[in-house]
Image 1: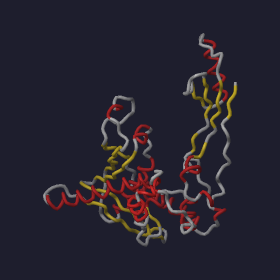
Image 2 (image 1 turned 90 degrees about the horizontal axis):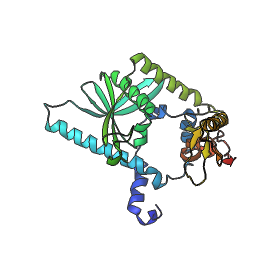
Image 3 (image 1 turned 60 degrees about the vertical axis):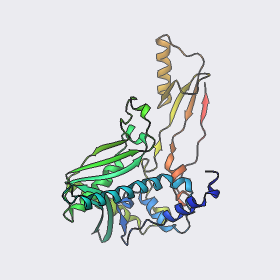
Image 4 (image 1 turned 180 degrees about the vertical axis):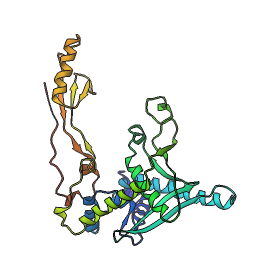
Length: 301
C-alpha cells in the first residue's frame, strides 16, 4: 500500500487494533501453546523491541476479527430474539490451571454439543487439506470446556473463503461454496489432556533458558518448502516436470528417451528448499540463531 501514509484512518485503526489482544492475566493462551516455544519466548522477551507491525501484515487478521465480531453480535441477538430456539453459547472464555500455570482460551460457538470455530481463510487451505492446526486448537477448547460442564461430541470449522472464485468450482479439489462446514477429528479426553500438558510443559521447560538455548523450531514449525529440481524447456515459463531429486531427473530423462519423447534442449533448475516462516513471517528472526543462510538457485544442462 504505497499510499498508506495518506489514509491515516486505516493506519490509526490498525495501530489500535494491535493493542486489543490480551491473555487476561493468564500465563498462556491456547493459541500460545500452539506456537513453537522458541518463537513464543522470544516474542515475550523482546516484545518492547519489536518494530510496529506494517499495515499490510495486519489486513488478514483485521478482516477475520471483523467477521468474528459480526457473528458474535448477530448470534447473541438471535438468541435474545428467539429464546425458544437454539441454545447458543457464544465467545465463551475458558480458564483453568495446569502444572501451576494459568491457561485461557475462548471458543467461538457451542450449540447442541457441537463446537464451531469461524475461520476466514484462503482456498489453498482447503485445497491442501491443511487442517492440523485447526484440529489441535478445537480439541484444546473442547477439553477445557468439558472441565466446566460444556460437553462436546463434534467439532467443525465454518470456513469463509475470502479469495473464492465461482468460476473455479469445477476445478478438482476447489471448494464448491464460499462458506463450507468442515468436520474436524474429535480426540478422546485422554488424548486432549495429554496434548495440552505436553505443549504446556514444553513452554515451561523453555522459560528459564537463554535465547541461544531455546529449543529449535522443527521443519514444520519453520514451514519448510522442500527443494525441487525443475526440468525446463526453452520458451516455457513453467517446468515440464518438477522432481524431488537429481536421481529422479535422470530417471525422468531416461524414460523420455525410451518412449521416443527425448528432450534434446532443456535445462535443470535446482530450486533450494526454504523456510518460509523464518524468511518472511517470523517476527523475532533477528534474535534467532537458527536462521539458515540463503542458497541461490542454480541451473544448467
